[in-house]
Length: 278
Image 1 (tube, rainbow, N blue to C red):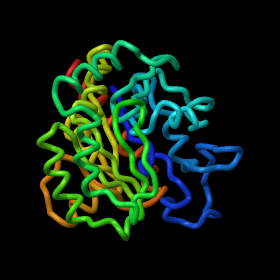
Image 2 (cartoon, rainbow, N blue to C red):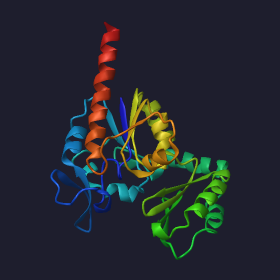
Image 3 (cartoon, helix red, strand yellow):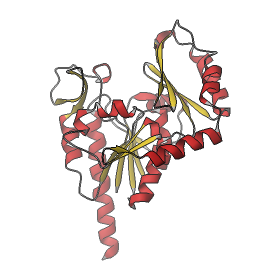
Image 4 (cartoon, rainbow, N blue to C red):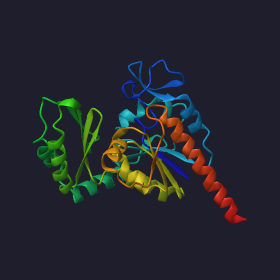
């Protein structure tokens, strides 16, 4: 079995996204920048991660760049996954090293299936303005990330431009104080599916909070999302039928519930397999 999970606002949480006071019990450092803790993980969630059965492969799946992923100390020292997906699926880290062949394939697919990055940036740039865009990055030579002032962003104009970008083979995702502009070919599902086939990984359990996680959750055999983030807000607004459940709690402790769900799914799948073999 594979447990493929988004990280930020799913398993690890910045001070801004904790949803509880910083002095709340059971919070452990997950990431440090210049010696200061910048993200936390629930002690219970980490313990449940560490005690996953041996036949469950935990795989971080994040929109973070390679550099940003490597800042998450808890997954570099305490719990080191055999595989990690970064750059929203554009890169795969195997045994600590970047899979260059996968990255090459993704770049080829981006060139084949959608507009060039500069063209996409130019078209999307028609809605960007210094009044609400703080800065931008071209991440791992694959996609754009814009830091924004959320309350100043002209939401309807951005959503209208997102529809145009989709026709050009690019997706727009708004996540908190960031807007992502990502080629459709760069997605979490494709990377996880590749690793699943490579490792004969069996059933996939997935968790994530954002629209960039939706393709992964839709692909998974079992899926859960926290009661916060883009997916939850979309569900509240549009009342969509989805194939995943939401946690009962929001904030950092949602990770406890997510990890309990993963253990529960493993027990039920193992019990079903045992019953079938008998």
